[in-house]
Length: 239
Length: 239
DNA sequence: CTGACCATCCCCCTTTTGTGGGATACCGGC
DNA sequence: GCCGGTATCCCACAAAAGGGGGATGGTCAG
Image (cartoon, rainbow over all chains, first blue to last red; front, top):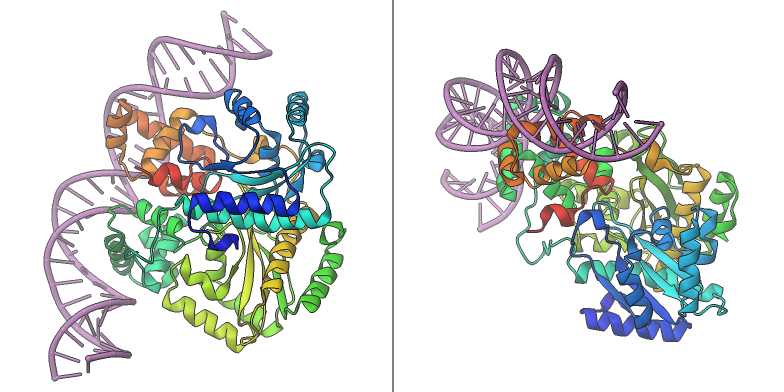
């Protein structure tokens, strides 16, 4: 059902309803902003208590939130109470968690939202201290969390590529091969050897690929193809 | 239950059992690349038909799996039949999917396995063509996939603590600025104007950034910084 | 105060890309 | 049979990037 939501408001409603149904007090669906990176178009949607949200904002806890740190080293969700098993917690972290407990954020479950090349994020579900997380709740949270994060990405147009509506460039296989090897750092001459064609042919393919994307640099071509899924980091970085 | 497995063999057993229980013919749990440790350290666990695995291995050079590309631009799992909704497929991609169908790999569901700056991979569940994926199967696959991938990461001991300090290149602010503008397609001269410094300074920053990443091309630098989260597409593509 | 790191600037020279033209051949659809 | 798209190849010239040397001043920790 989360897959079907068409607006941010609707997502808020569905998530709130989900929390009610499965016995969570709060949820928070956010992209983690790194202060170093400056202002971004990161999204944030939650129904945490006002007081906690304010406190969190003013103290810029986002940069050192242990939950965020943990979600950066995990693929699946985790209970907050078990974070110590895979990241070290500082004194400040414990202090922060204690503060949260006092304000009604006790135990929780966080699902990492990690897509290569994008700002990292997560979807958390939290309860007052003393409300244990039942296995069904955890499973539901894992499913809803990953799905909701994906919806949020699309709603906020993290990658502005509505390529189906607009005419997104599509490369021919040969063009794609050339761009792939270019993205792996090969020069035209090397690509020519690899694909067993002339250097001029490679040049030509890349030139035409550039035209399709409306760019005049191969590095832009590489980035655009990575951004729209024509290439993937997997293709490029594997060797 | 997957969380509790303690060995690779056990994981294989549990996954096979999972497939039997929920009606999947095959699974494939693979790490496509390991950003930190470089080539040769990826894990792979599957029970695909021998013939397909062999074919895949021998032809994998230069060819790219659309499923892997798709898993690179998603946070949650997806049905293969709906890939066209978020990545473009080339003629070669369709051909490859057709070949798979002939060899008993029809419809499937793939859960991305991405941990920033570390591993990119996925966990797929596949069926013969004509076996529709029921909603329960999809939910089960989503849960099992993300969890299994996390277990696999830990079993293969991909990560030890504090890898960031050891292995990941870190750029200075100025270096990052230069790489950012370079990734936006600017030349050294333009970047110099934008940052109000000499062209030589820009050159120097980018050169030193290249050194840190051990690459010899700015385009590689751009891609690596995108892959490890130093830059994000949001930074690069917004205007 | 010394050494490490950072940011800034300069030189010369080679290689690689980008841009502007071409050309031939195959293949599939109308 | 023609047209559009694809893949292949060719040339010449200008612009950009890469590789090798340097230099200066500033900051900050040991």
